[in-house]
Length: 47
Length: 194
Image (cartoon, rainbow over all chains, first blue to last red; front, top):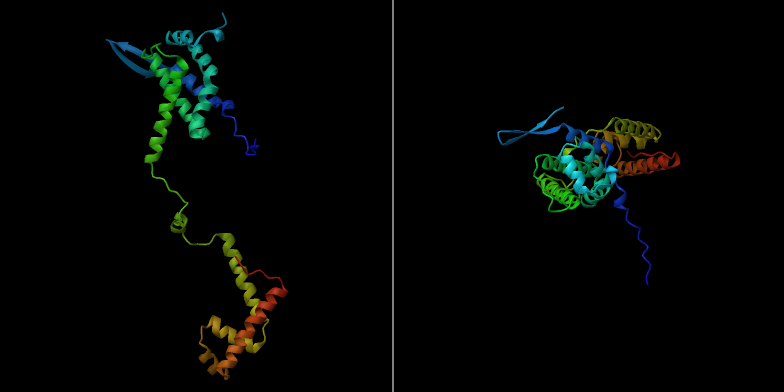
């Protein structure tokens, strides 16, 4: 069987997001609140 | 019980009920797979981070607004959101005006102001100075013809009248002037290109 000499493609499975991105998501989650008033849902972001 | 060993469904349920650390566990558990999935589509780390962030913002909103149902599994649902956002990204990108510089037309030939930068200007002035010095090295008769032709833009007829020689002699002097200039340039290893 013929050998394949082309370079092996980089492994995407080892990639991770930046810490800043994770921190932003977690901060956003803590800041994001949903309040219900008379059956209506209101989204608020509390900083 | 160790929270890290809890199932996705349990963590989602806890998160909906206000347990923020559950989201941290969910992100840590699935970040690599989700991030790699997005990167395999967009091949750009910055865009991948953006899409990854937008995916979780959508996840957070859906969960907190109580719109999430447990019909499907958590990760496939998140992957689907990411996939849709990647499609949105490509749609948005295609709508933006793009310039492809692979054809015959070069945008920089239009955008360029034509002015030389400081380095090119300096090199040009050095070349002019070198040429002037080389011309001064030529024999008088050749130098005179060359100056009249190149700097005064005189015709060979005018040169012949001014120097009291035939046109053929003027042409010959010009020819020898150029040959001698080339010789001087080669002998002195002078580079006259910008």
